[in-house]
Length: 130
Image 1: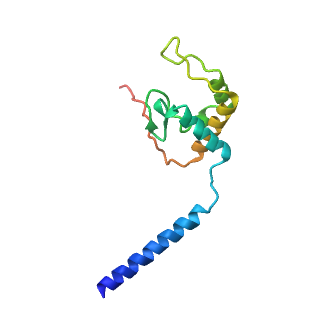
Image 2: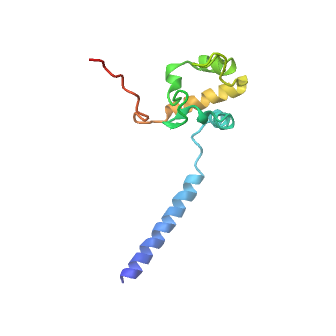
Image 3: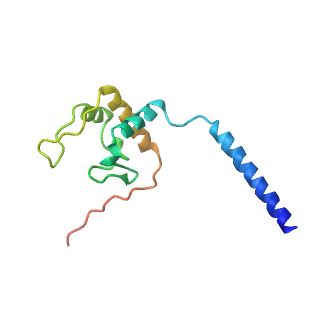
Protein backbone atom coordinates (compact mmCIF):
# COMPACT_ATOMS: atom_id res chain seq x y z
CA UNK A 1 0.00 0.00 0.00
CA UNK A 2 2.78 2.46 0.89
CA UNK A 3 4.71 1.63 -2.27
CA UNK A 4 1.60 2.10 -4.42
CA UNK A 5 0.90 5.51 -2.82
CA UNK A 6 4.52 6.54 -3.27
CA UNK A 7 4.53 5.55 -6.96
CA UNK A 8 1.20 7.25 -7.59
CA UNK A 9 2.35 10.51 -5.98
CA UNK A 10 5.67 10.35 -7.84
CA UNK A 11 3.98 9.87 -11.21
CA UNK A 12 1.47 12.65 -10.52
CA UNK A 13 4.28 14.99 -9.49
CA UNK A 14 6.24 14.19 -12.64
CA UNK A 15 3.19 14.74 -14.88
CA UNK A 16 2.49 18.06 -13.14
CA UNK A 17 6.11 19.13 -13.61
CA UNK A 18 6.05 18.29 -17.33
CA UNK A 19 2.72 20.10 -17.81
CA UNK A 20 3.94 23.27 -16.07
CA UNK A 21 7.17 23.19 -18.10
CA UNK A 22 5.29 22.88 -21.39
CA UNK A 23 2.82 25.63 -20.50
CA UNK A 24 5.52 28.04 -19.33
CA UNK A 25 7.63 27.46 -22.46
CA UNK A 26 4.77 28.78 -24.59
CA UNK A 27 4.39 32.02 -22.64
CA UNK A 28 5.74 35.18 -24.28
CA UNK A 29 9.18 36.33 -23.21
CA UNK A 30 9.04 39.39 -20.90
CA UNK A 31 12.43 40.58 -22.17
CA UNK A 32 12.18 43.24 -24.93
CA UNK A 33 14.06 42.56 -28.18
CA UNK A 34 16.39 45.52 -27.71
CA UNK A 35 17.32 44.24 -24.25
CA UNK A 36 18.10 40.82 -25.74
CA UNK A 37 20.27 42.51 -28.36
CA UNK A 38 21.99 44.47 -25.59
CA UNK A 39 22.66 41.28 -23.66
CA UNK A 40 24.41 39.83 -26.69
CA UNK A 41 26.51 43.04 -26.90
CA UNK A 42 27.33 42.58 -23.19
CA UNK A 43 28.41 38.98 -23.81
CA UNK A 44 30.21 39.62 -27.11
CA UNK A 45 32.36 42.39 -25.58
CA UNK A 46 32.98 40.41 -22.37
CA UNK A 47 31.81 43.29 -20.18
CA UNK A 48 31.46 40.90 -17.24
CA UNK A 49 35.23 40.55 -17.04
CA UNK A 50 35.44 44.05 -15.52
CA UNK A 51 31.88 45.05 -14.54
CA UNK A 52 29.34 43.34 -12.31
CA UNK A 53 25.59 42.82 -12.56
CA UNK A 54 23.70 41.81 -9.41
CA UNK A 55 27.05 41.51 -7.62
CA UNK A 56 28.46 38.91 -10.04
CA UNK A 57 31.31 39.54 -12.44
CA UNK A 58 34.60 41.38 -12.39
CA UNK A 59 35.53 43.82 -9.68
CA UNK A 60 37.82 46.11 -11.65
CA UNK A 61 35.00 48.46 -12.64
CA UNK A 62 31.63 49.65 -11.32
CA UNK A 63 28.54 47.54 -10.68
CA UNK A 64 26.12 48.42 -13.47
CA UNK A 65 22.95 46.92 -11.98
CA UNK A 66 21.39 50.33 -11.28
CA UNK A 67 23.54 52.61 -13.46
CA UNK A 68 20.51 53.86 -15.42
CA UNK A 69 19.07 55.33 -12.22
CA UNK A 70 22.23 57.38 -11.75
CA UNK A 71 22.95 58.46 -15.34
CA UNK A 72 20.77 59.36 -18.31
CA UNK A 73 20.52 57.12 -21.36
CA UNK A 74 22.04 59.82 -23.58
CA UNK A 75 25.06 60.13 -21.30
CA UNK A 76 25.61 56.36 -21.26
CA UNK A 77 25.33 56.04 -25.04
CA UNK A 78 27.75 58.94 -25.51
CA UNK A 79 30.14 57.37 -22.97
CA UNK A 80 30.10 54.05 -24.83
CA UNK A 81 30.50 55.60 -28.30
CA UNK A 82 33.21 58.12 -27.33
CA UNK A 83 34.83 56.67 -24.21
CA UNK A 84 37.08 58.82 -22.02
CA UNK A 85 40.35 57.71 -20.50
CA UNK A 86 39.72 55.17 -17.71
CA UNK A 87 40.91 55.95 -14.23
CA UNK A 88 43.61 55.54 -12.86
CA UNK A 89 45.30 55.04 -16.25
CA UNK A 90 46.51 57.98 -18.26
CA UNK A 91 46.19 56.42 -21.70
CA UNK A 92 43.89 53.38 -21.57
CA UNK A 93 40.36 53.94 -22.82
CA UNK A 94 37.17 52.00 -22.34
CA UNK A 95 36.49 49.97 -25.53
CA UNK A 96 34.30 51.98 -27.92
CA UNK A 97 31.03 50.68 -29.37
CA UNK A 98 29.11 51.76 -32.42
CA UNK A 99 25.88 53.75 -31.91
CA UNK A 100 23.48 50.79 -32.38
CA UNK A 101 25.39 48.51 -30.00
CA UNK A 102 25.62 51.28 -27.42
CA UNK A 103 21.86 51.93 -27.56
CA UNK A 104 21.10 48.20 -27.28
CA UNK A 105 23.46 47.85 -24.32
CA UNK A 106 21.83 50.80 -22.55
CA UNK A 107 18.39 49.24 -23.19
CA UNK A 108 19.68 46.03 -21.60
CA UNK A 109 20.96 47.96 -18.59
CA UNK A 110 17.58 49.73 -18.31
CA UNK A 111 15.87 46.33 -18.31
CA UNK A 112 18.29 45.03 -15.65
CA UNK A 113 17.44 48.05 -13.51
CA UNK A 114 13.73 47.07 -13.56
CA UNK A 115 14.43 43.64 -12.04
CA UNK A 116 13.61 43.75 -8.30
CA UNK A 117 16.81 43.02 -6.40
CA UNK A 118 15.54 43.64 -2.86
CA UNK A 119 18.65 45.66 -2.05
CA UNK A 120 21.16 43.23 -3.59
CA UNK A 121 24.06 43.70 -4.03
CA UNK A 122 24.75 45.36 -0.71
CA UNK A 123 26.48 48.70 -1.05
CA UNK A 124 29.59 49.50 0.91
CA UNK A 125 28.56 51.64 3.81
CA UNK A 126 30.42 54.82 4.47
CA UNK A 127 32.63 54.49 7.49
CA UNK A 128 32.15 57.27 9.98
CA UNK A 129 35.31 58.58 11.51
CA UNK A 130 35.18 59.15 15.22
